Length: 125
Image (cartoon, rainbow, N blue to C red):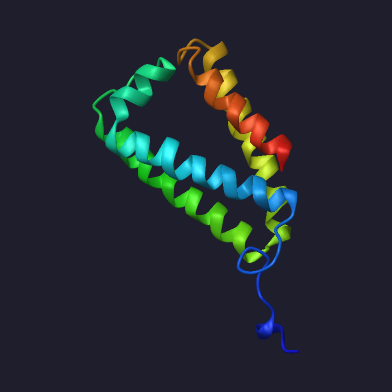
């Protein structure tokens, strides 16, 4: 059998727990963060106690989050296991940054919820 004849785990085979966690996190990034920030930024920001400033930057961040979410889903479906540990380190890094920003008084405590989601998702992976 040629390598190209094999199906990727998420296409027809079974995904492992890490791949499933990346798939779920990708969906969260696309629909909760991405779509939320692109189409209902005031609602999402009010929910987490954050400020939108001029408003356009948060929609741009939403678009970037949705692209990242799509990458997470594609990696999970393609069975790219080497990518999994990289996501763990970067999600812990992101959560640490968010917590520091809150502790410095630069953002409201609502950001801790988003950091907690990153920590839980990274730990699951």
